[in-house]
Length: 103
Image (tube, rainbow, N blue to C red; front, top):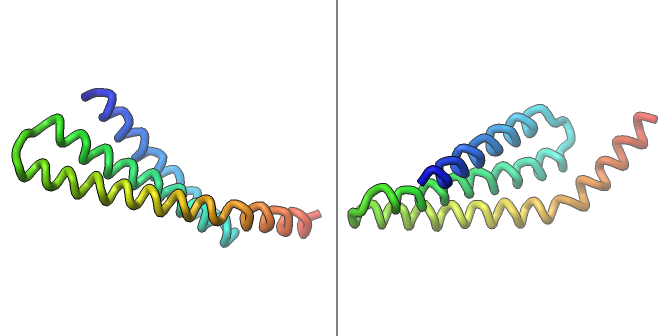
């Protein structure tokens, strides 16, 4: 499935992008927000990888491993989304605080 491969590569790229931004950020709340985003991207990567395995192989072992990957990936993406949503107001407040200090 070329479409799934494209989505897998895209989600892995977003994971790397957000991790680089995470390490370059100096603000603590922004780092937590970026950590949530990278968790969503990694969860999507793992879930899509498991889904792709269902189309490539048709053994019982593949079905079990793919189900585990899909469940873990969806759980990681959900937890990352909840973390992202939780930290949005704090990041806005932190940005106002840091922008007020520099002027």
